[in-house]
Length: 287
Ligand code: PAF
Image 1 (cartoon, rainbow, N blue to C red):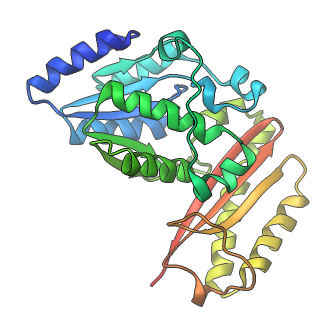
Image 2: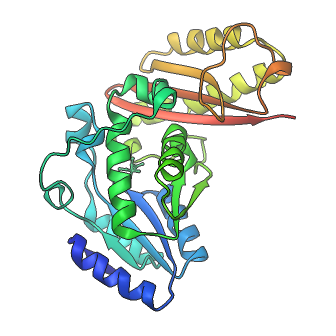
């Protein structure tokens, strides 16, 4: 496995591989890798000649200095995990390499970023748009792999790829979960044992909300039930729970019942366990 820190060196190497006709599958990450990332690498490896993983904790997508400061940085352990599963190339640039000067670029993804993550983390998707565009230009992959856990990020990147004509295929892979249902996330390692024990509640709540919607309980009541359920659990602070149209991610509201749900509905949650912010989602498909 080759590790590059320099953009130019990586580009030179990848140009040579492309000239040989090899295809590139790309998994952008911020490191602190877990089995969710590894499953993306495995898929990239399976469907391309070369698997490239970037590891870069992107400062422009953090709107909270504490979150950026405590974001785990574990390059040695990450590299060992990637090598063990046969990843071909790691790109681990410094912040100076990626941003030699502050960028004043601004992305605005419209309604897509006015809700949920975009609403509660202002500027977050601007930072994601900037870094993912830069990474796509640097790596020029045939396929790029992202996890469904970051559902709104997937929609934003899909918009980026379409609107800016990136010549690549976006592949969205299912959320990987621990045995107790907790969505795998780099942030899980910041949870205390007590918080870790509470964390699967988020997925359990999403599943209960799904059952209620399928039982024809209206959206407003389902949202209220979930909020009430979490309200009595000390240690979990709900930030948002939305029931949204999967295509537009615009929240559905009111007394809409299951019969009136769109073909695909996304149930999305964000909550704090202490200072650790977790997100999760679940999709309901019905005809
Ligand atoms: O999902 C992430 O880890 C990051 O948002 C990404 C896509 C690597 C951009 O920094």
